Image (tube, rainbow, N blue to C red):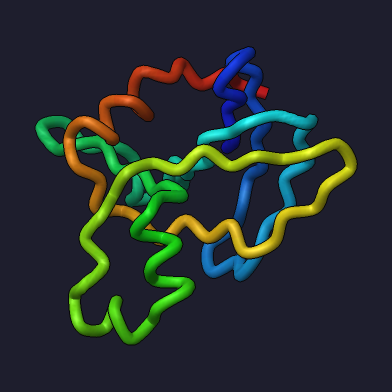
Length: 116
């Protein structure tokens, strides 16, 4: 899911288990990109923190510096806004961060997800 930081407009795509890539068509804008798990056994459980994956500084660190990730040196979990220009294709927007601190998780949970 991508949420425009100016307008709040949402763009979504459903994925399957073990799907290796995704394509999300979105208009020009500045987006927070995140995932909400779905399917059998992955819903939010009562009493548990809701699970969300996001594109964050951690995601970039893992992608750009796998040696730092392996050494446990990727510690920044700040959500990153992704700029998308008109007719621009962005690749490698990987949602590696499933360990969001409370403040960042709260930002995602505050978004009322629209059903398509």
